[in-house]
Amino acid sequence: MKAVRLFGVNDVRVVDVDRPVPKPGEVLVKVAAAGVCHSDLHLIEHGRRAQKQPFTLGHENAGWVEQLGDGVDGFEIGEPVMVFGPWGCGHCAPCQASFENYCEHQSESPVLGGGLGTDGGMAEYMIVPHPRLLVKLGDLAPGEVAPLSDAALTPYHAIKRSAAKLTPSSFVFVIGIGGLGHMAVQILKKLYAATVIAGDIADDKLDVARHHGADHVVRTDRPDAAEQIRALTGSKKCAVVLDFVGAAPTLALGAATVGLNGDFTVVGLAGGHIDYAAGVVPWGASLCVPYWGSRVELMEVLDMKRKGIIDIDYTTYPLERANDVYQMLREGRINGRAVLVPSH
Ligand code: NAD
Ligand code: ZN
Ligand code: ZN
Image (tube, rainbow, N blue to C red; front, side, top):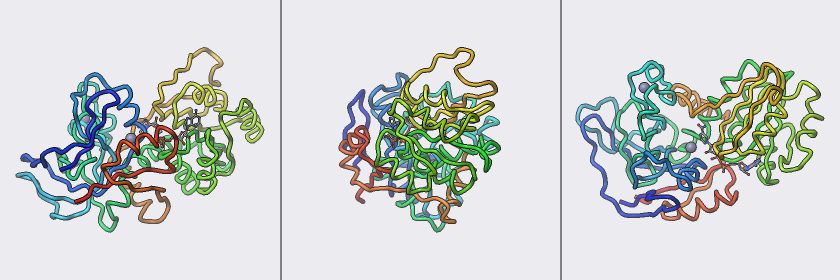
């Protein structure tokens, strides 16, 4: 079967590999679609030393159960499923509470999930090591929802942590309206009453934010971006800032725009840094660095999709075009999410 594999820094190839066979306790999933996340670019460009390469990329996966390893039951062959992406030990307290994204053993394992240190879903089939890592899709078509497993789950988890601060009187600033950011705007507008300010360096991304209901948009590369936001919020500034970029300029802008007792939530992994000193962020402010989300939150995300609360803007590409798609993502030429589809 065809698979998109990471061989080393900046070395992604579409190659033929053997179709895997599930061992006892595992499930073989026939992949319908795999979302293309910007985290893959960080991985491709910088690598993670501990990870054994090559492995198949793709950590936003959905498909159909193809084969059950010995001892696995509870699924029909052909049943549509979403792969829950962060794979923990399954036994510690956070894992038992379905927060495998905060598994106590995460730092001991070079494998964070399928596509993140071991074979993921940019292939015709993928192995899921345990049935608990599958969420039943029921009436949802796997080819239409795969990216929700990260591009929606991650902002949903990040936003939910700040729910109490998203009041009708408050402002929330979303930086980076790409795959995650365009979902964040929808979640904020549909579930909360805070005024949403969206920021990006590209006008077409700001159009996407407007389309999804952002109340205000700001070009964050303008030197007066912080003043523009201040003009909207007044002196109370933003109760919540969600940075889906994480580069030095967005971290500085976030610190400048978060209000007293606010949440400065950095999701993006662009490698920026911020020097802490008293006064860099206001009194009472918290810096949060959430990672992905829980399995139960993923079920809530799927219910939001079922109820028409959220939708994902996506464009499909054949698996073979993975390298072109990564290049388009690098150049900011993808709106919403790109999704790779294998030909079966
Ligand atoms: P994306 O490429 O789809 O979107 C990025 C957006 O940011 C684009 O709209 C781009 O125009 C904009 N942007 C780039 N530089 C900017 C700047 N300096 N100021 C303002 N806007 C800027 O990326 P994505 O897939 O949505 O991922 C976003 C980030 O989140 C990535 O760094 C990714 O690695 C990270 N991520 C983190 C988690 C987590 O759990 N913490 C999960 C998934 C993704
Ligand atoms: Zn991701
Ligand atoms: Zn665990």
